Length: 155
Image (tube, rainbow, N blue to C red; front, side, top):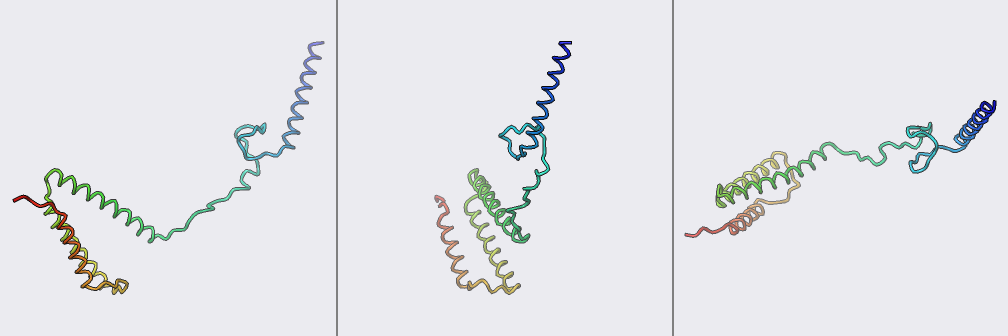
C-alpha cells in the first residue's frame, strides 16, 4: 500500500511537472535562435519560422551580352598570360629565337589592326577618332621599341 501511494505521488509530481512545462512552453514564445535552450527538440519548427523570410534581397540583374563581353576580357587576359609563359619557355629552351618571335608578333599585330580597320569601315563605326597617320606612327613606335628590346647577336 505504501508503495502504491508512493507511486501515485510520483505520478502526480510528474503530471504537475509536465503541465507546468506545457504552460511554460505556451507562455514562452519560440524564437529563431540557437544559443538559448527553449525546451523544444532540435528539429522543432514553429509556424512563424518562415514569416521573416526574405528572398533575393540583394540580387543584381545582369545583361547577358554585358556578361559575355566582360568574361571575354577576362579570358583574353588569361590567354595572354598563357602565351607569354609559352613564349618564355620556348625561348629559354632555345626552341624559338627572339627575332622569330618579333617577326610573328609584329605580323599578327599588323593583321589584327587591318582587320579592325576593315570591321570599323564595314560597320561604319565613327566612334574611333584615330586617323591612319596616327595609327601608322603608333605602329612605328611599337615596332621601334620592341626591336630595341631584342637581344643583339654577337657576330
